[in-house]
Image (cartoon, rainbow, N blue to C red; front, top):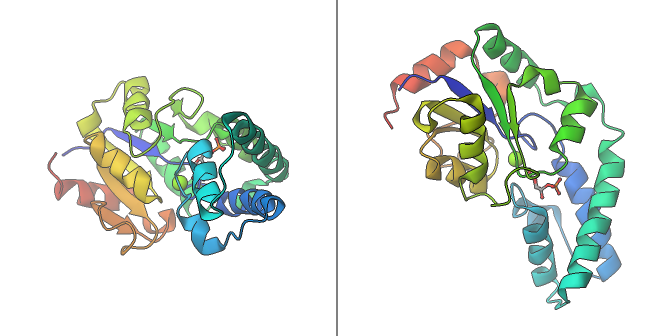
Length: 221
Ligand code: BG6
Ligand code: MG
């Protein structure tokens, strides 16, 4: 295949926001008397806000009505927004800015494909919104990963065919979403966790356009 569009997940691929999500969920879990560990938090990566809350409630075997669920999700988000409003550009993950700039310099269309409704706020806060040609996020697409919706939308906005796109993802649900979209997927993280991806790198500091061109030769979609 020949890649003509690159789609990046945001949380855990470009920015180190996972710990803020964890801190905010932990604060809610503590309030509800639910034991919630960093290990439990792994299950929340890439998962939508409401689905994440469901997992936490399940951990605590807590049954609550829909109205209260909305209230708790809003409370978690309020805390999360407080944390990310203090983020600085140096919280971008190593190598991510350099790789994006290299791709941009080569004229490759770039998009964000994230479940987060806080995507615009984070991109602006970090100062990288202008580096992307399109942003598909939780405000635009309501289906949650592993549904391919958000990546299909990103490709559509870029004007690139799904089969010509590569997705960079750190979450199992996100890797599945990319494959469901018929796209090549490069996992960012641990190979044993992201084993379904076509390739896995530890971080974007291991990526370059040259490496991408080598990878694409090995994939036919
Ligand atoms: C994903 C994160 O990118 O976005 C999840 O990996 C998060 O942890 C999800 O729950 C939704 O984010 P938000 O900001 O809309 O609550
Ligand atoms: Mg992620």
